[in-house]
Amino acid sequence: MVDWLGRGGIAQCTDAWATECGGAGHDVTIVTRPGRELTDGPVAVVEAPGRRGRIGAHRAVVRTAVERIRDERPDVVVVHNYVLPPLEAPVHDAAHAVGARLVVVVHDHRLHTLRAGTRAGLRVQLGRADTVLAHTRYVADGVREYSGRSDVMVVPVPALTGMLRHEPIAPLLPTEPHHWVGHFGVLKRRYKGGGIVEALARRGMAGWGFLAVGVGAPRDVPGLHSRAGYVPAAELLGAVAATDATLAPYDHATQSGVVVLAHLLGSVPVASAVGGIPEQIDDGVDGILIEAGAPRSAWRDALVRLADDDTRKEMALAGATRAWSDHEQFVAGVLELVA
Image 1 (cartoon, rainbow, N blue to C red):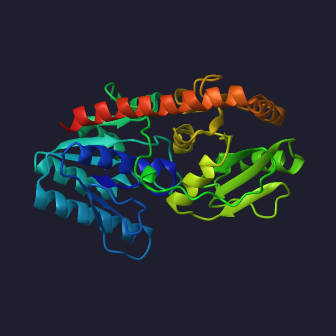
Image 2 (image 1 turned 45 degrees about the horizontal axis):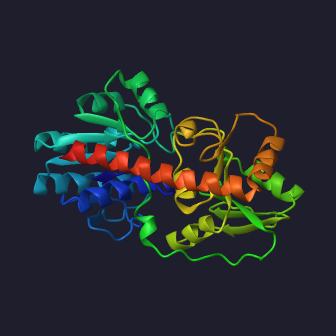
């Protein structure tokens, strides 16, 4: 597996792929950049040597991956996402040269900034791949539109099994209020909707406390408990498990690892109905969807609804069932793909 992903929930998908393939008896090696937060599992993780600058570091991963593919001659090469396809072409060429089945997993089909990456040349690479896969139909449709491939495979977003190997560390929170709602992830990104969470916390809600955990978590906001920065997996697990609901007021999203984590840990997700999110939440059954552009009162109304213990617990149970059912579908699809 060649991993171009960064950090955050989407980045944990590589770990889930590796864990399930390794657990099924496949000999798995991940090639990635230094410092990648992949947990210890039944696979080998090869970090490319560090290089100065984003381009230099990316080239180092490409060279390391090509060397591994040529030396080990794997049966299957799985490439997770893309950053700069022209630089990544040698990986695809090496896979074809050794006769490996080439699988490209597109986690985010949207155009990026020049700093973050470009999909220039990606159409050719996807056209040559044996299988192109996405974790939501929303992404698959986007890939079909620009690549011309009509056979994009879709399997659900997996459970974050690598993270779940850690023992949760509960945050130190006041015993009051009775319920807690969390906002988690790389919160410095504006599309995460942090402004809505801050506004709700400032105004306050009877019986609810607000918690924000992740890079860019705002400090010194009245009514908001904050843990800023990248946190270890154990702390993130503990924080999500300590909440009764998780807010995901995204402006846009291809998929959400936060929604999956909330489902797994019994925190009911309340999320914007944008992008691939409606594929992950059955509104009123295992979470609550808020229409894009809805007033802030809609988010307050959702929390009022979840203040009812019976309603919230029923949704939380349905969410856990949903997450593991989706994961079983993911495992079946991935293992069939690499068999």
